Image (cartoon, rainbow over all chains, first blue to last red; front, top):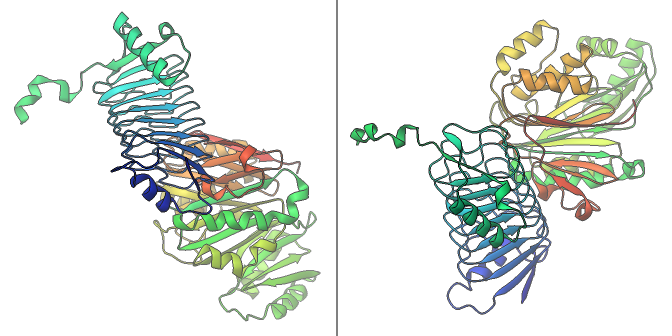
Length: 227
Length: 300
């Protein structure tokens, strides 16, 4: 295992050491101490690494992650795991706004609450939030799953495409074209798998499912003639 | 962009270290605002019926002693004062209106940075670290302090356009964001008798709160009204003689982090400004909710 103390090393040095593993992997485990809310920690990883960040991280932590498992033992600032491709990012505390924004794949687990715009424009990632999510979560979400074990803020799933949204608690309001949908056996199974992968003990039967009503412009075949 | 920071002490034994704890917070926000910086510190309060005023003069070697003498003579009262770089703080046995009237008449080139019983505002164009050093921030004592590092958008990079803004006794505000209805609101407030020194949007927010408090609102009521009447993006940190508040607009696109321990409440645009505070590893750290305000007040 290799350790980095960010009062002794720069974030750039840490990220370079992590990127150096992408060809031939010489070291799989990294512990990062004293992150002190610095931005861009453990970004752009492309190897099966295990990175533990021991404290609060700033903006865009674990952005563009591929294959690696990154755990933040604290809170994360905005844009955590933005544009993640694969792997797993786990936040032990809260995450600020735009967690998992535009992410294509992998699993993002937030054990506390997530702020506004969680999963904005998500493109295939699975996001599981143990607490609440803020307003405009999953705005323009295209693919993947968003699971919220607590409550959701205003305008959940506005202008949604194909994301499956599961919420156990109260939804303050649904965004344009987002509707509650029937929870069929395949959804109970899908949600059960997501909770199990996230290591969160919840009963899938207590969740409601939300998705796109497919009534907005892009879903109307009559508009195809515009192209 | 801009960075805002605030520190409100719950434990009075830390008051002698307020400046020392706060200086790294301000400097940590240099990336968010390298154009100008300033802070408002509350402490060293004068008794009721007296006024404390912070003045600034463009000349570094301005003769404050003569001004103090003339003021004591003009107002027929006792004055104590001290210089801090190109600013000076005067404690005067006279009311606010009397002091303002004398300054306007007899020292029109001295700019009033703050007026109240407790507040001192110091601000300048340039790097936060340089400004903190110039005013010897780290040696300052007090109960609470709020600060700002500015990346200018809505008005010029000048000392006048720097934060914090004050428009009422001991009230001050720092702002990250931009208001969209400030021009009309300024006109409304001017008709209500609120004074404005600049065309800056944040000064309008400070003026609005000063006006609501003059109307008899509590700080809580004033902030409830502000959420209805201010349009735009904002994270505010607000200081009053005995209080400290943080408020975010409903869209909440301007960042904010709060941290609380038994000893203090601290606010910053980004967590990295809080990372050096004592006991921060055990603090409750959270992101303030949209369209919500948080107030801490001590007995007046």
